[in-house]
Image (cartoon, rainbow, N blue to C red; front, side, top):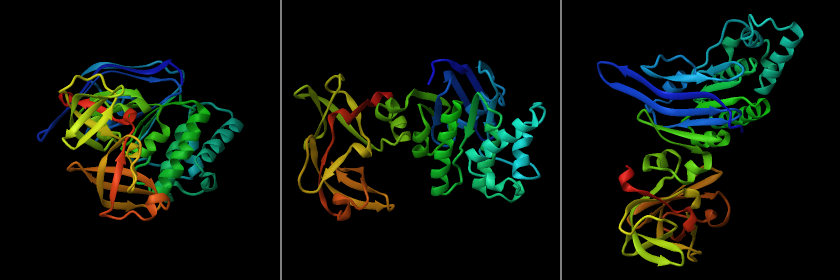
Length: 355
């Protein structure tokens, strides 16, 4: 990833008014860097697609600018891709009309684009007969044949089944890596986003709440809303105490539940204590290093690959993740007592005043 900026937003303001409601998107500043994937996350109605359309120059702002310094095309793939009449190969060639490309090079580029997304076998099939997943792959092939410098993707995994999402995300990641295109992608699918993202921008109610490197946003969200948006589902109200253990501070949920954390927040500060599900550990009946107390399993959800385990602890519900068919996951049932632990380095504190 380069520090060179290919798209830059400054002071952007887009307003929508209707009889029923009003919406304003305000972006003070946001950059897309060369060779990076910037994932834009947020709940429905946050303004993600509006922001993406503004990056493409398809939205007229009330104020502010979007500046492009890319040396090549800026291409957008919409949430609901369409096709032209004719064959799949014709649809990809059509993107090159007027480019004055020699016929041999044109054939090569079309074939490469079809190969990238596994639809070369459909070259002669009428595009109108494609399934939803095949149509999405066609739209991506049509975008990549242009050799864009910037690619804008709106919900590229929408309306695909689990297998379709998995294979398309891998093909897309490979195509991005091979070409070095800078990508801004809007998606509500966190798992797919994390396969692609270098940085994450979290958009809530028309405002950018946090923009940072992928792991920083995941591990150190600035607000509880950001934490929920990036999968930190274990959020518990607590208070920073003046009690210490070694070089760690104890954070109190109630008189029976204190958790060690590394923090510079003052004693008495009310916080959200966040622990990502993958960082909450359990060990039936034995306990572990950095124990945080005992809980009771209330629900076990098994999708064949992973278990989502819900646990009652300190009057609230926590979640952890286990690999299906391994260790305690083979026998864990609702009602089972469990000992919980969390590494203090993975206990994140968010002052309540930020929300």
